[in-house]
Image 1 (tube, rainbow, N blue to C red):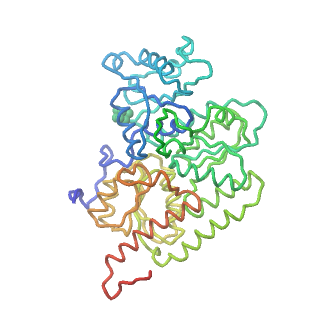
Image 2: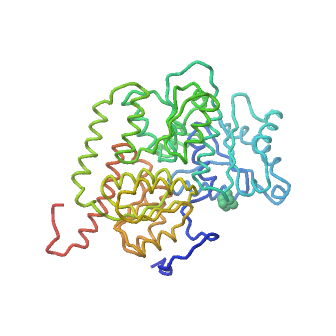
Image 3: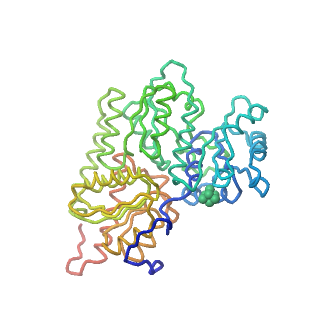
Length: 457
Ligand code: SF4
């Protein structure tokens, strides 16, 4: 009963967030930067911010997160952090020699007004950036947007590394958005099976889901290489998965290098995956191989087999916009009823899209962008649900209200597996469905009377 004081009565709040459904921008920028091979994320601010961002990612991915900081003290906080940044660039290339330093700002350096592009120019002019090494940057003030905005801003900076040569490379850029390393691996597997040559960026597979080999590597094998990022400007097109995470980078490539882009939903669930596969088929001009058709058929089969347990079940969802849009569509396609949906990331477009997806459900749907988990709990108190899907913070609500709960999204602090098992694509859909039906059937087994308790479900 940790949240027993949450009242049922909902009052309008505009200047107070309770139990946020988001975290701060630099965490997203740091995660994105780790998807470049040989990249050291750098936090331009105080040590405390950097320590928090690293630990937030470590707790989710269960991997050490390397990142450096400008280590602001009182002087830099008042007069600006240019001197710290220049010293940091020099130290980092001298000591760690990364291929890329990816700098993001924090609330502090943004409030002072530090101008990263100008500091980068000064560093280059003073010879602090060695030949063949790169410094990219993103503005990530945490008092605006969310971790999703920070991720998007850093991915847009990666698009800025494109160097078109005028000669097409025959590849398709795929910007996967903030998904797990296992999801990035699965997207590469799917495109490989279909026969599409791709550049995936960012790509944290092999970085944050690597094996324990007994040998420490400051820069793991995985990640999109600098050569690939440069080559994105020569690709024949870009598929951006997710409006919030990936669209800005895709549009940057379109504007800067005339690489046409399509913005799709993240391929979670049957229909969003169908659209992703169809987009790949169209770009590559190939037929869909039987291997992919079989995977689709397996997902459809499992949905049909389990439909009796899914039909009409009410669901509460919390997470990030791109994931929630695809998940809501997946649940609706299986005749479930996602009735309470909250994201901490701002954007009225999100509410509009969810309303479109749920319009034929025949019941009221509560949806809020820039909402919080306190509001979600209040909605659940007013209209209980059969299932909660969301990050680890949902466990308090699930426990208090005794509701089955599937962990999905960011952050997951108390379970393992999300880095290794994908939830994108048809195979990922099977995994999601297995998790959903697993908790619903566990609850049925727990609550059924002895006369209804069955061996075979
Ligand atoms: S000060 Fe800003 S950037 Fe630093 S941890 Fe807090 S919200 Fe995040």
